[in-house]
Image (cartoon, rainbow, N blue to C red; front, side, top):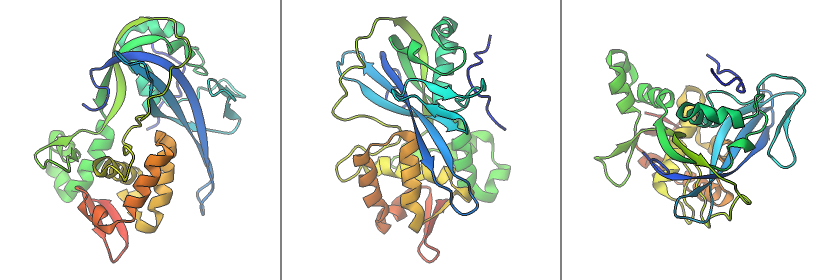
Length: 288
């Protein structure tokens, strides 16, 4: 039986194959002000704390969970979603929705620990699972079609998907799929005392690793922002605003966001990203 706690959808990296304990799940929201004719909106994200086998400190994974609408909010402790009606809140095809759904597919008995209304997910804390990174074919296909242009009409799905891969900046012979976090196996459940001390360096999806900036990770952030942008194009003067939005929905740390922001000001960096076209005259970047 399908889990009904989600709002139905409209219209091999870090953690892949690794087992660990889910030690905490909390939510946060971000209000984005109105811009021109575009009304204000609120994004919802979930922070999943994971203690990998053999480690004692927890790593953070920030997963997009959809949007909050009028009459919906997050409790002060971040553990519970609040709504003035019974309509599910978390988007089924969001990163967090896919994460939870994958646990249910791995072991349907997990549903017994879920709030049927999809308001609280503390029941997942204490589960030891094996994680996996699953190809986000929708996003990757969109990138591939943009890069192929007119050639996409005569290309196979496999060719389009291949064109949408992320290139390795240090090795031109390597490329990677766009992916999301999932669970491939549920190994059991145990009591958890506290969420666990956070690792000194936390991990967020597609986020630079600190310092002066990880160029490969920053390039992935740019590709992700362009995949979400209208016509897959952004004005260079609006890159910082796009980065702030991306950081909020993915949980990028302030340090990593600031490091990436500095890199976005570097024309040489923008011009070097594989799959990105930089137009100096129009002052735009777009997927190529």
